[in-house]
Length: 299
Image (cartoon, rainbow, N blue to C red; front, side, top):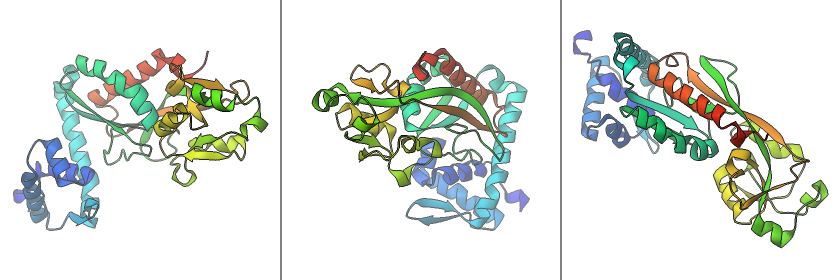
C-alpha cells in the first residue's frame, strides 16, 4: 500500500475537505476540477476507504476522512516547518495565510490595511474570510482568527489584539425626525436596531441585555447591516467605535450614560503559530491595532 501512496494527493484531500466544493478546491490549487477528482480517487484507492460523501452542501468527510484529516494537517505543518528551517520562508514569505474575522472589524479595519502588508510581501497570498461566526483553526479553516473571547481549552493560543468601546448611535436623519433621547425612559420610546437573538454566535454580542427590554424594531445577524440601517434612519443602535468614529452621519447618543467595552483576541493554533508567514501577519495586525488605538477606545 505504501508504494502506491502519493503524499502529494494529501494537498487535494485537505483543500476539498476545507472548501467542500470541487471547483473551489481546484481554483485554490490552480488545477481543473477533474484533476482534484482524479487525485482524490487515487488517494481513496491507495488507502482503501472512501474519504468523502456528497450531499447538498458539497463534499463532506466520511469517518475515514475525519480520521485522516488531522494526520494530513500534521504532514502539511511539518512540510511548511521544514521549508522554513531550510531558509525558504525565513527570508521571503510565500504561501497562504487565511484570516477569519467578524464582519465589522474584518471589513472596516483589516481589509483596508492588508494592501500595505502585501506590497511588502508580494509572494504571500492573504485570504480574509469575513463572517460572523467561529472558525475551525484545527482544520486550517483559517490560520488566524479574531474572537471576542480568549480560548479556554484546546490547542489554541490567544493574544489580546485590543479592547474596543461600544455605545448607542443614531443618524442625523433619525434624530431630526424623532428627537434626541435624554435617558433610558426616552430610549424606550424610540426604534431600536440590534441583533437577531437566536442568531447571535457569541455571548459577548448580547450587550442589549445590559439595557433592559428595549423595543427592537430592526434586527440583523450582521453588524454592518445594522450600521447601514442606523445610518439610513431606521433607528438607534449599539455600534463599535471603530465603525462609527469617523462618519459624520452617525451621532453618539446617551454617551455619558451607556458605555460598553469588549475585547478582540487574535487566535492561532499551536501547530502553525510559529510559521514565519503566520507570525508575520499576526504581528502586523497587532501592531496596526496598537497604532490605531483611538479608533477602538475613546481617549
